[in-house]
Image 1 (cartoon, rainbow, N blue to C red):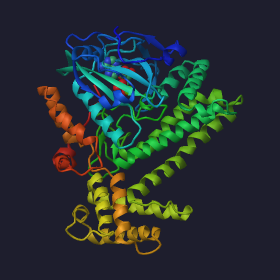
Image 2 (image 1 turned 90 degrees about the horizontal axis):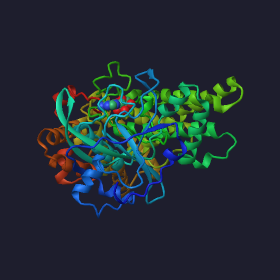
Image 3 (image 1 turned 120 degrees about the horizontal axis):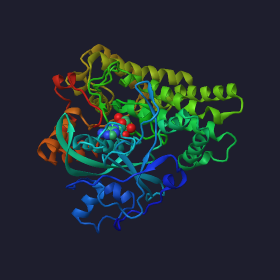
Length: 509
Ligand code: AMP
Ligand code: MG
């Protein structure tokens, strides 16, 4: 242990004994700091300035724990691809402690890849460098896009090879999360019939993530509704940027509503709602368009664990749980429509169900145009912002017209959209109003997303050649997703068609 800038206050270790196993990270033979998230360290109020490179490497490889750390492996269960595993748990991760950030929010600091724990089953407890850097890139991109996410604080190389078919450089990721409570954490205790512990966990989750609900007349039902709402918001955010999580198992669904576990995730390029990238997702369970339904399915699994807490009468409890989970559909629809309106540059929400229906149809018909042309999702939206800048038109020769070659269909849709926009101005919109709309749309429609070929190129350079320059350049671009800069232009370009057609992602190993 050595003095460091962490001021730990470990509520999980303190309040929830029996929910974890105290465990130590396995020392790395030759630690090297490869990535440090200075902005996040600052947000967490960490003072790392007094540590030299060697100390930072030791700290983030798990060789020298900071003062006050209490490393634990958390227990959890989970439905993986629909099948229930009663015991998963932190097989290669450790929660080392919690800090209060500069805003007073409690944040978990956890290692991933720090050696096997009692939950490791047959795994080696290790992580390869590529997937850990991938978690940095995608998490920072999501954060820059304003999407709730866990974030990477650091990556340290271990100096050890991990066997993943071929030997690959090993690494430890330090992950920051609002908490690591998952749907699967509740399932672990519910599956053992330990309803007292489910209640204890729910009380902890309410106090930590939904404190306004404590002391209400139906706190557990309110809690369930609140988790449902946050997941609806989160998945609507994903859909808005074309993000495919890829492994939406219940152990990868966070109770505070952050995106967690960047394994086989990827951003869609050509718009196709059926898109699947994960090599193990044989039946497309976690395809882009299935994500809302899967989120709701996972929430039903959470609801099942809470049933004994909802009412004395089991019939009544089941009805309450079902009603709460059914609420997902309306929550999601509302969040999705708000996302689409922002992307379409619409401010006024409309005044009733009819306006909502018209806007849903406007968004759906736009997406149908994209699908018919298999247009690049990100660029199509961005070029729509350019069309707004041109007064709501996209003449032949513009980038939008090139992406959507069915010109009559595009013109017809643009006319509807133009009229809908102009109605907000109370008639014909002046050029200044179109310019303002275009500027707003450029803040709702990123130019730079983590494109798969760029991510792979950066990870290969780091993993195969120890060259971090492509990773760093890509990360810098991902941190300003809405800006248009000449030096970032290469990151805005879609992959060659052949690349995307054969692209597969693998579970984060
Ligand atoms: P994930 O697919 O990363 O969500 O992990 C699912 C489960 O497998 C969790 O319990 C992990 O801790 C465990 N796991 C994944 N990889 C390893 C590994 N290399 N060693 C030990 N446990 C692992
Ligand atoms: Mg996981």
